[in-house]
Structures are given as structure tokens and as C-alpha cells.
Image (cartoon, rainbow, N blue to C red; front, side, top):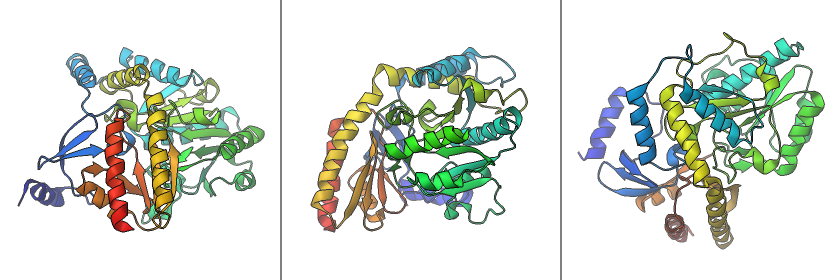
Length: 401
């Protein structure tokens, strides 16, 4: 029994079977490279599912984490800490100060829960109109808690968890007329991703995003933008909504915020923030000194190294090459889409076989929506690493054709 088989056997005995794991056990990582327990190296095009945006094992982050752990690890949100304030100020600045307040938590699901609670409480306590419904879109993914999985609205994620929370309405994607028809006096907010990640890397059209914003303003409904996967330079802007020129009332973030440490954030305007007062919402570990210190450094790195521009340039290069492949293999590939270094290659058949052949050639990515190869590498990936991946994918496609 080799090292991987031993680890797999141990896992079978002690871990809940909630993950369909890939046949790799990773022991170390640096930059855009992963090393498995058998000593084989892989180019990482998954980044822990769009998390490790500034690369694995950054020495600067290791230094910050060690220094902070030696100074102050956790005291709870009953006390002030400067590390949390530093992270909040930099986060707000990254969105051009179009938001005024931050609530820190530990994950994207928690950030979206906070957004849902804020929207409902704003409607019921500030506007006093009794509204509570949250409208979301088919194909969305907003988290795995009971509320956020209901907001997600995909039956496969809700199977076996009934009864689901009330107050969520799902409408078709990229269909403004359907959204307009769904608005009622009970509607508190519309929640959307501008690129549906788990839904198959499906971008909103600019016309749709503008229509959603206009409809929300027309009806006095809050607009929540879920930037858990699309934010923090991933799409070629610091935040995806900056591509679309829309201004959310509430925005959520997580994943890449602390480059692998659990951290989420909800950003909101001063007006919506009025609904939260002491005791209405909380998170024991949210914005703790360790995560905040690392997040603060992550935000510095993203700004100083121009990672949004890098994602835009390398993403455009990769997308062009992938579209050339799609033109060469029209019987295999139906679409190539995305922004920056958040790209999806949709196949005309289940893409698992493509994924496994890429593993064999030393490249890690993943499949979403069964037929979409999702590419969300660390934003520090090199052009040479992208070219190596493209060459490997070309080899795989030749074998499939």
C-alpha cells in the first residue's frame, strides 16, 4: 500500500463522507505548484477553489501569521483590535469606498447569511414595510447553510434537508422580465452573482446586470452582490461589479480574503448598516486578529503587485487560446466563457474524463455543472504555466477527437 492508499484508508474510517475527493493527497505547495505525498508535482489551476489568489506558501503571509500568533491570537469581538480595523479600512478602500461598513465572519455562506439578515432587518426595522423575500437566480450558489442553500435553489443541494426556510424566490438567469414579474411588496432584496461559479462559470450580460440594478432602484429593493468567488482581483477587476458599473447596497466576500485562512466579510452602505445594532448579529471568530492580520497583508499584495491587471491580461490570453481550441474541436467544446482568471470550458459531454487526463499530465483543475472545466488558478500563475496547461489540454482533445 503506497502513501496515498494509506491516507485514503485512514480517511475512510474517520471523516464524514461529504466530499467526492480527487485521487490526490497534497503534502506541500508553493506559488502555483502542488506536491503530492508520492513526490509528484502539479500545476494548480484550482487554487483551493478560487481561494489562494496570491499563491501558496507566501513567505510574507507566513511571517505575518507567525508574528501575530506570537502577539495576539483571539480575544473575541467584545474588544477592539487594530488588526480588524486595518483589514476593514483596506477592504473598503479596495471597493473605492463605495461601501461604508464591514461585518467580518468566517466563510462565504456566513457572509451571505449576514447579507440576508441585514436585508430583512432593514426592511422590517428601518423601512418598516414588513418585506422579507429574497429573490435569487436559477443556477446560483450562495452556500451550504439552510438559508443559503435555499437561496441557491438547486434541488441537488437541498435533497434530504426539508423543510427549507421560507422567503426565497428563484427566477431565470439573464431574464430581466422574469425578475420584474417576481417583485412584490414582500420583496426585501435581490441577491446575485455576476458570474455564476458553481453554476458553470456563467457571466451575467451587462444589459442584465444593469436591468437588475434598475429594477431594484425602481421598486426600492436592496441589491446584494455575492462576490465570494468573483472578488479580490479574480475577474480582472478588484471586484466583479466594477466590470458592470453597478453599485450594490450589500456585497459579500470570502474565499481569497485571507488566502486560505477562514474569513468572510459583508460590506454595506451606511444606510443599510442602520439595521444592525449591538446584539442583532455576531460571529465569535469573525475578524479575529490572526485572520485580519493576514487579510490585511493579502490586500496589500493584491494592490502592490497589480493582480487585477495581471488576471485581466493572462485571462484574456488564455481565453483566446481556449476559444481557438473550441473552433478546432466544435464536436467536443460548446463554449468558452468567463472574465479574467475565472474561465469555464463547456464540453458536450461529462468533463470528468478530461479532468482525469489532465491530472495524469500534472495539472489540477475541477469540473462544475458536470460539463464545465473550471479554471481559477492562483493569480500569480506564469504565462509559461498557462502555456503548459494549454498544450496538455490540446493533447487530451486530440485523443478525444
